Length: 207
Image (cartoon, rainbow, N blue to C red; front, side, top):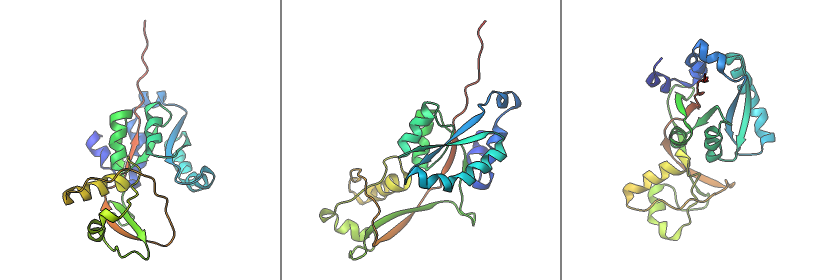
């Protein structure tokens, strides 16, 4: 299976990771794999949500799969770079960072239940705001404070920046903006997420 095919696999086939391993290579795999997860909330709350998924991976791959939690994409990328993370679920931007910085390799992409690719990048304002779309925001940009997302996020940073660029305005500075009740979203499509793994370096011997 070549890399081009691996990179275009659908979500339902993500466990094809096992097909990437030759018998000799499989014997060299660690007895456990670490799966990178971004901690959008406490690990205590996230762990029960991810446990069934990780258990399914264990059954499919035949090895123990551990959760590796990090507060942001950078933490997952660094974890993969320093061999603390073996597999992770990235957006496109963070996936490319992992390829460049952590020897990552894309082998699958996610799709929605109906087969359509992509997800949504959301622009949120107060529910009482007169801003209802991107053009409204751009018209009032001098009077507004914009809270951007994770700089390694496709939907939270890259898509808003590229959407703004053709409008001849500079991408806003990055800042963390927590979600707040009573806000209304404006959405635009964002590319699909990617599944990645860190190839294991073959063992060598010296005589």
